[in-house]
Length: 281
Image (cartoon, rainbow, N blue to C red; front, side, top):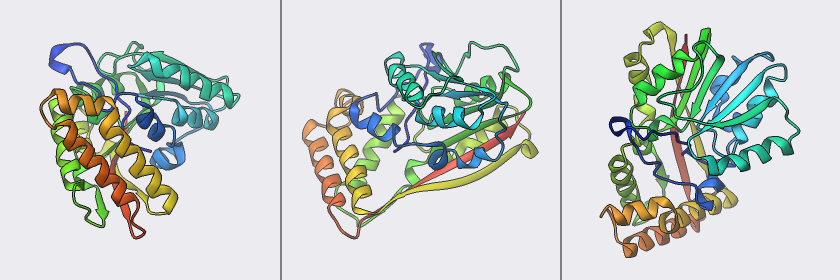
């Protein structure tokens, strides 16, 4: 379900490590995402003929939805990690979509001419990049005049849950430390408007909104708690936490146990707040 697509660069001053990696527990969340549950703020601006760039496309579920919404246009899904694009292509092929392609690339230096796309979109990307302002400048550059740069990112510090199971506060603190050590900004949602202004968008060109995911049914609780429990002990995030000296394997197991305990509570609820911007070029 969530929140992790990322594109990053090898240049030192912009370097950031994608905190989550592409473990099965991460892709489990990515493949849940749709245009409806993750890009609703953008859908009203789409027209059938549009050319769209979807940055940090991951396994391609949002990308495929966007392609279906622009049948006379074309969507390009871009991802830093080539290994996940096979799954993205299979997603599009399984839906019979012929107006979508997938490429590798770096959001800090997009390999497209200026004014190539009607919409340039990034979901859960800027929280993971080394230079989000430069990324937004590049997104603006490749967008046609009159087009839109659309960005949505979670804000970890604004995540909230019930009940207060012991260990989940420790999870949030650990995630902040690991993500920032990797060069990212986990509380990106609240910063999107400021980053867009720094990237050169005028105040009256930026529309700022917010929306949330929430998990409360037994199925949602089991899914959300299970993927975070698995991610905490088995993904790149777990390795980075241990190798960076942020947590021991024992501490990670305790956090995973806390996630499973929370997921088993019948009154459990979890909310994920996102910041969103639509920037007119």
